[in-house]
Image (cartoon, rainbow, N blue to C red; front, side):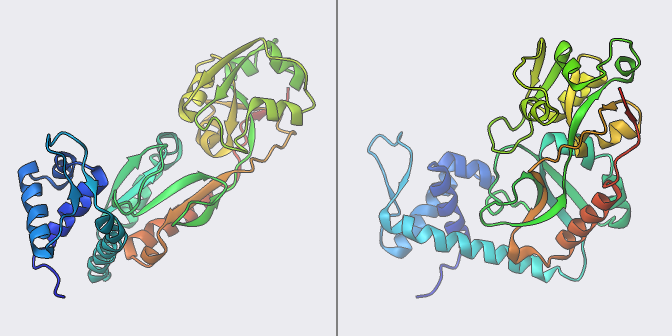
Length: 314
C-alpha cells in the first residue's frame, strides 16, 4: 500500500483525534475547520473507511473508531521520526529555535539571569521558553529539552542529574539584625513562616514541618503562616520582610549572594530528597543545539554548586 501523497491529511487526522475536535485541530494547524474536515474526509475516501464516529447533530466531540485509535500510536511515532529526521538534516550546526520547558520560578530565579551567557556562546540558537508546572507532551508540544524538579523519573524521558538541593530558613537582612530575630530553631514559631505550596502533595517535597522536626522542634504550631504556591514569590515575600521563608538553595542562591536574603542556622543541614534534572527524549540526545544547551546547563550548575556566604548565626 502506498502512502497518501499529502501527509497533511494524516496530520489533520492526528490533531483532530487528539483534540476530539476539528475546530481545535484547525487552531493548532493554523487553517480553517472546514479545511481540516476536508482533509480528514479525503483520507477516509482514500482508505475506504471512516475514521471518526459522527453524530447527526454534529455537536458531539469527535471519537475515533476502534481501528483509527489503534493506528494513532504508529502515526504519532511516525510523525515524531519525521520531525527528528528533519532535525538530523540540520546537524551541521546548533542554529535554529530551541524550545525549553521549565517552571516559572526556576526561569525567574535561576535560568533567566544566566541565559545571556548561553546566547553569547551560541548566538545562532534562539531559545523559546515554555514555563509551566504542568506535565507537557514533548512530542505534541514540540519541546526539545527541559529542567524538572523531582525524584528523577518521567516516563519517556531521559533524566540527567543537574543540581541537588539543600533547604534552610532565610529572612531579610533587616530582620536578621533585629534583637527579636530567632536565636534558636524554636524561636521560629514566634515569627510568620512563609510556606511554599508550589508542589504541594508530591512525596519528598520539603516543608516547614519536616525542617522543624529535623531541627528538634516538634509538637508546636507556628504562631502565623503565609502560604504561597510559587517558589519565587515565597522568596520575594521574605525579601520584603513579610516573614521567614523555607528556601530551596537553587532558588535562593542569587538572592543570598546579592545580600537580599540571609540564611538562618547555617549549622543545620537539611538535604532535599528531590533534585533538578535535565530532561529530553533519548532519540534527540545528539541534536547539536539540544546537546549544546544541556552541556551549558551542566556547566552553569557547577558554578552554582558552592553556596554563597550570606549567612548569619543567630
